[in-house]
Structure formats: structure tokens, C-alpha cells
Image (cartoon, rainbow, N blue to C red; front, side, top):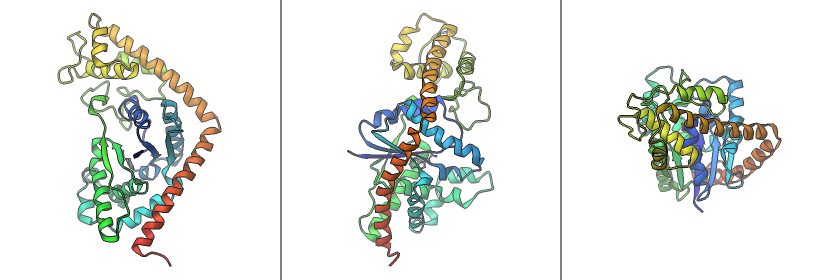
Length: 325
Ligand code: LTN
């Protein structure tokens, strides 16, 4: 079975957009790939985070992923900082990455424009390369914004292999399906984002059900009062159709057919009903998982498993470059 590795940065609360755009895909991938998903808590430090909030979010994410249907038997979920080999390998890779290629990273260029840049923000993609190369990942599912970073990981691996002999597998990016991207309910031309300032357009997985209902009922639409998918001209309605079809597992066509004689009010109510039902059931599972001791036992077991893989890779790498006795 091919191996999949992906990380989620614990900044901001998870939204229904994360569920539809990413988590749902992981649930499909786990049938096909030996999957490793980690909470990239070390990556979160590249921007300021309140330590207490960060710690809470880390476990929240694990509980939410499990509650969403990630199967702990098929997917190994772990916490990056609990496996120190990520940082170990990252250093070796830093010493095999050229300033020029790291400086070309678009995300760094964009983020550093705002000033106050730490060295960590600059070397972030190299830590990400370590995350991937440690596990001999075949595929790395991620948003289009991370494609360049996966390609950098590949370049670093290729250079290292050439210089020191075959050590790392070359990973392939698996780019998120754009058709399942969810947009802001108040501004449906903008991605629904977990780190946005206003949360009126954003449904969090831990939103209370009634406020989620309100957000959907006040979603921005258009005045045409016809329900069909047209992303260009009807971004608000199209977004609601994607949400509805993803949650109910109907196709867009089936959803369009179902609402062809309905008005926007009726349609929004139906979307809200489905979303609320989904959130309610999800939160029930989430609370159950968080309050049981099983989550810690599971994370301990995952940690042991990934440490074993990672320690072998780091040992091999140290050996190849000539470190130690
Ligand atoms: N940079 C990614 C998170 C991330 C990641 C990874 C994704 C960190 N390490 C390794 C895939 C593989 C992000 O910002 N979404």
C-alpha cells in the first residue's frame, strides 16, 4: 500500500470548509493509502499563538478528526512535536537546501511582506520537507498553496539522494479537489477561512447549532431566486449547493433537481437543517472522544509507531552524512 502523509496547522478553529475540503477526502484516502496525519504544532509557532490556546487546539483537532470519521485503525494521527525526529531531520535538510531555492517560496515572500519575520517562517518549508521525507511518503494531500513546498521537499530529496546515495523517496503532491472548496457565507468569492477576523461567514465544527443555523439563513445570495449551480454568476447559491451535497452525499445535480421548484428561503432552511444535524452528531462524538482516556492511549500508540519509522530514517541520514562516531 502506498503511504500518505499530511499535516494540519493548529491555528484557528476547524470549519465546515476544512471538513468538506480536506477531512472528507482523508476519509476516502485512508481506504487506499497507509495514512499518517499529524497536527503540525511546531509549524504553528511560526506565527504568534497563545500557549494555552495552542495546547487546547492540538487535542481538539485530533478529537475532531476522529469524530469526523477518520478511522484510527487505518490512519495514524499523531502530534508533530511529540516526535523529535522531525526537528532532527529538518536540520540536516536545512544544510542541504540552497538559500536561493528557499527564498523563492511564494508563501514566505507573501507573508514576510508584512514585516516582523522570524527565521522560522523562512525555514518552515524545510521542516515540512522533513515531515514528509521522514516517512517515505508517496503522496502528500494538501491545498494548492502548499504545492510549491511539496515540490521543494522533492528537490531536496533528489539532491540529497544524488549526493549521499538513495535515502529518501520522492513525494508527489495530491492537490485538493477545487470543486469541494467552501466559500465564506458573507462573501462567497472568498475562501471560508479558520483564521478570518469576522466569523459570520464561517461555520465552525464546534459552533453551537443555533448560531450555525443563523449564519446559513443569513448567507449572501442573489436576487434571481433560482437554485442551480453557477459559480461565476451565483457564487452564494453554488456554495450552499456544494455544502448541501457534500453533507448529504447527493450529487450537485440531484440537489438541483430536489430544489428546482423551491425558493431561497426553503432551500436555506433545508441546508441549515442538514448542517445542524451534522454538527450535532459530530459534536456528540467529539465530546465523547475528548472525555474518554482512549484518545491519550491512542496518541501514545501512534507516537510509538511513528517514532520507530522516523528514528530509522534519521539514523540512516546521520550515517550517510557522517555524523557521530
Ligand atoms: N504547511 C501546511 C501544513 C503542513 C504539512 C506538512 C502539510 C506542515 N507539514 C507536511 C503536508 C505535509 C499548511 O500550512 N497547510
